[in-house]
Image 1: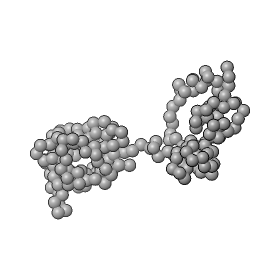
Image 2 (image 1 turned 180 degrees about the horizontal axis):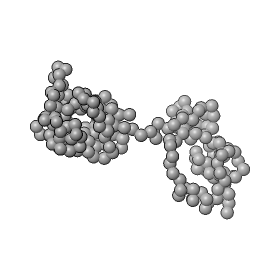
Image 3 (image 1 turned 90 degrees about the vertical axis):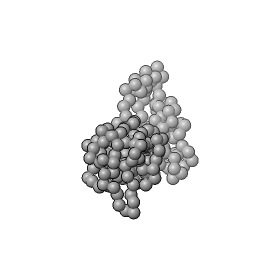
Length: 197
């Protein structure tokens, strides 16, 4: 079987003796020599551990950590220190109560909240909050909320929302069952600061 080095940057097959990829000039010094059988075996057992490292070019393009030239503009990037790829970082979505020492981390997918639903340990004592008051949807790294309550409603930054999903942003104030009137809040409603990061 023919032996070769697979470039981790562009996937090009190179002669086993080369130290740079013939296609993108990525460093191949530490790349193992494989054949078709060992390459497939390696792909089948590959696991993702930790955060991927990249070289971020001045033009803004992300390049593999072992790239010597930017794949976008062709600039020499050997002097750029590899850093973790921010896209691989896990984003957390947290609601922090404005009137208490309580926070809630929103999980992927759909979550119904209310006095007798999700967050009931906190919302159970808030009489302006319905038993099933609202629903969160965390999908594609976007957090949205929709209202279920037909009496006390759901508000984002004092604006009433309807029964369709409305996206939440970092720093929004989410209110369940009440609004902020001239700096004062209703005690039996629930108010949260949305934190994304």
